[in-house]
Amino acid sequence: MKYKGYTGHFVYDEDADIFHGKIIGIRDVITFQGRSLDELKTALHDSIDDYLEMCKKHGKMPDKPFSGKFSLRIPPELHEQVASAAMGTQESLNTWITEAIKTALPLYNS
Image 1 (cartoon, helix red, strand yellow):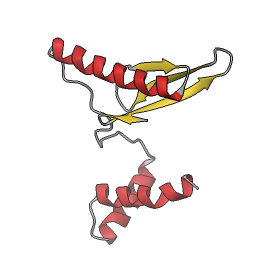
Image 2 (tube, one colour; image 1 turned 135 degrees about the vertical axis):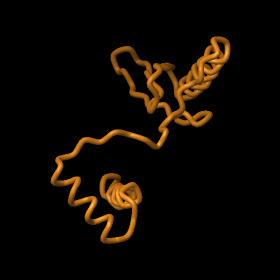
Image 3 (spheres, one colour; image 1 turned 30 degrees about the vertical axis):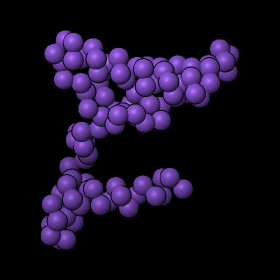
Image 4 (cartoon, helix red, strand yellow; image 1 turned 45 degrees about the horizontal axis):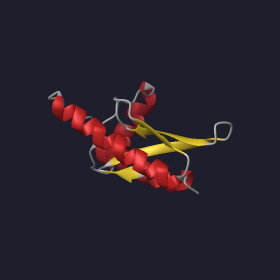
């Protein structure tokens, strides 16, 4: 579920007969819950609106989901291989890795 650029991930708790959700891709914690999908969607919207209002009230910049930056630790040998592959295609390291991830995602989503 998405709202105002934020993505909510939710699971169903069979024992409690309720959906529990959390906004992913940010450091702050925003949760929501509901007994139906309509209730869950409303709760998602309310939680994000409340979060944005709280940030505004306190003069805090709200976390932005998925900035496009992440830190990655890989073995030095692999780093060298990737850098060589990128140079061989005359692409930047970022471009080469981005293309490799785009190529791998359909395999994961199959």
